[in-house]
Length: 161
Image (cartoon, rainbow, N blue to C red; front, top):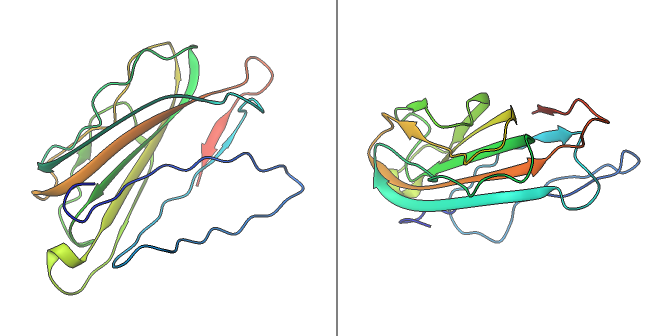
C-alpha cells in the first residue's frame, strides 16, 4: 500500500468440475481487478516465490524474488497506481512482459482513482525475477510478483486471461 493503492495476488486451485465467480468487496473507493488462469500447476505447493515493494514515481518495481525452486515456472506481476486509466501506461521492463492487462477507474481527482496493470511470463530457467515498469505517470504505486511451479513434464503449462 502506497497512498491509497492496495495491490494483491490471490491464488486458488479450482477443479474443472467447479465454476467460480469472482467478487471484490470490502474496500472503499475505486477498485480494479485482472484475472489469469494458469494450467499445468501441480495440485499442491504451486506458489513458489513472491516479492513486493511500494513507492512513488515513474518506475515501479517489485524488486527481485529469491531464486526460484525449479526452472519451469509461471510469473505474474502486478503494478497498482493511484491515478486514472488515462495516465501514461509505461512499458513493462521486468520479467513479466506477456499477456498484459491494464484497467482503471476515471473521474474525480487522481487520488480517487486506481489503475492496475498485470503481466505474465513462463520461464524455463531458475532465477530471481521482478515486475518492473518505466515511464508511467508519476504516482504512488504498489508492485508485486508471484512465481508458480508448473508440473514438469506432465503438462505444457500456459497462462490465459
